[in-house]
Image (tube, rainbow, N blue to C red; front, side, top):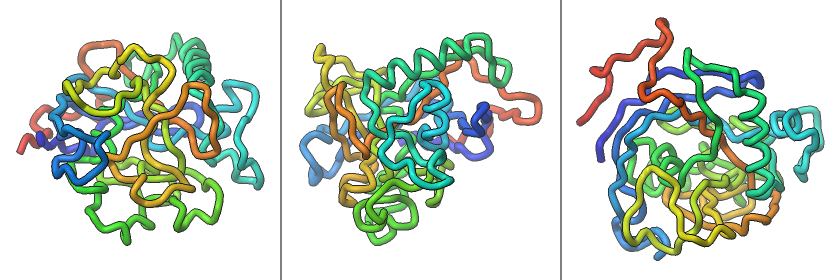
Length: 270
């Protein structure tokens, strides 16, 4: 695995207070190398992340969704802090509309001096961030007894979603990558990694099933592993299914503002 030091990287905050952190190029092993996992996680393959992107620190919240769409479809809306819970019960088609409206609104908005666009992550981008340079079942290791510190699942959620960002982040600073809500990815579903994968979304010709990642508040711990994967029909809505955004710079090179400058020597290639 080509390890990249993601600490102290450029970031920006949107109008909702959500933070997006730069993910720099690198490589990692996608899937299950030991062959002891689920067949859909095989064969393991090396993926090159060649283009930088900005990844949302947390899932999209109900407040953000409602501001863009004018309606909140979520099941768990009770309480003064409900706006900080992840939006759920959104289909893939709903997400397409949401992102389209977001891009229309932000067409003239720049971040760190760059133009860009909002989109869903590809499955490989999602797992690259979830693993945060580690190869275990979770980024923190292989023991699910430690999972309670980092994610909401069936064993600790109390029967509903929770506010985003309450658990500890992973090593690259991202919250709720293990549990809380499954997250839509841009890839069409395939039952294996046969043929390998790239950074770009995988296209199979079946545009009815899309990859979802992360596990949710009502799934068992195994479903929250970094490599665990599943799918949902594009029209499916569930109280355990939401999304996380990527902001993709349109320029070829990502440059930080002067106060956030990062030299190429800060990347650890060991």
